[in-house]
Amino acid sequence: MDFWSFTVEASYFIAAVLFIMGLKRMGSPKTARGGIVWAGVGMVLATVVTLWHPAMEAGVGRYFLILLAIGIGGIGAWISGKRVQMTAMPQMVALYNGMGGGAAAAIALVEMYSGAAWTHGTTVLILAVAGAIIGAVSFSGSLVAWAKLEGVQKKTIRLPQQHLLNGGVALATVGLGVMIVMAETSAPLLVTLLLVTTLALGLLITNPIGGADMPVVISLYNALTGLAVAFEGFVLGNAAMIIAGTVVGSAGTLLTFLMANAMNRSITNVLFAGFGVDDGAEAEGPEGEMKSVEAFDASASFAYSDSLIIVPGYGLAVAQAQHKLWEFVQMLQKEHGVDVKFAIHPVAGRMPGHMNVLLAEAGVPYDMIYDLEDINAEFPTADAALVIGANDVVNPAARTDESSPIYGMPILDVDKAREVYVIKRGKGTGFSGVQNALFFGDNTRMIFGDAKQVCSDLAGGLKQL
Image (cartoon, rainbow, N blue to C red; front, side, top):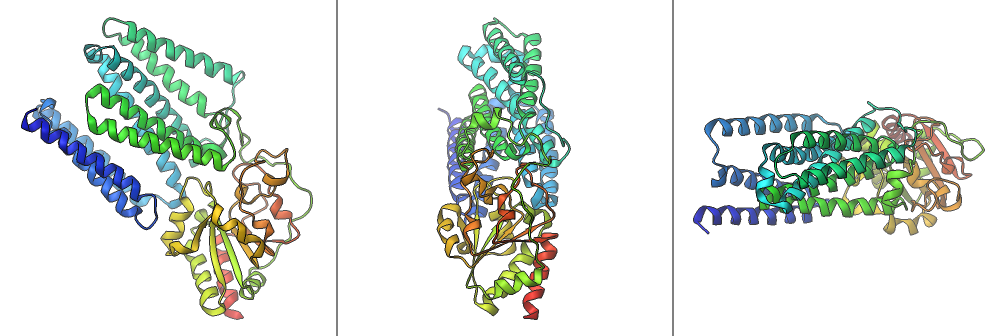
């Protein structure tokens, strides 16, 4: 091994260590920012070394195009990252994830169109085909997920004989892949047909899935993107791509299973059951009326409580109410001595960690934030619970109603608190279309209105006491 090759491989090893250490540090809110920086440094190192690699043998013009693409992509990502609202973060994750899958598929397609994939042997060709299929499915599927979360696609589309159609397109895709592998040289027509069927497959698989399952789907496509990148790393002989893709793929797979388990559902059920397909439709639910209360009365109840558990949901993010909420909580703690804790469900919000990031943005200390397993036992002894914009994760029907689509899903036991207050814009069913029995409970009072305004009114009510 010459000096240049040794330097490149050593740099890739260092980049891999930075990726893994960065991912490790992302496991805690206290070190997550540093973890992102570590992983970012690793990515910069891997990119620079790849451009420096002697095997590139690129001319000035090719380097110019590469740097131009990096500049356009980097500037676009920087601007969009700065402007994106917390409520739109899941959409951005879906979009960026789709771009990663599309890039992996594009690498494979270039190798196959040029005929270079056939010069590396059958194994590399198989990996190129597999990477193209997985990357293209992740690309088109992630775009559908983005469209649903962004509200561009408001209705879930289910075609007649949907599963049969999906199976037929999948078989055609595999058949084309086998034909490409068996071909003796470049087969542009087969490669083009493969691209068409894989993109169609991603659309067909994702379209029937309800909006409530989109976070799990995004996580699954993230894992597939990592796998596609790893495969293309083998095709290009790039160790950094292999390691980074493997890390992303394994982490995404683990996260997907954790999210599915938190919903008490299997991955196949998420992909094929169509839960939440009637997005926004009025759903059947418990009989009775929701009992409303004014913010001032609720604030008085909180002020005379010894303990309060707050459950944030997507409604908190939509209203950007986290700062007003924290202002209210600080008043409860300092002026009334109330013990306040925050309870986070694994699938609260639109992506894992959504609520944690939202509360951290407002300055809520990490030691006040508890996971489901750590906080559930405290609800029966809590004087009050406050739910802000959460629905399925606090629905007691998951424990009692076997006919409910969410039956068996682990939930936060909010209904067991002495008093329950729910901040909600209106009487709708929420993102999944499942009505919440909690809202009709004898110990539940609804505070209707925008979460930010209600939190401001709660703080105002405390000042009048």
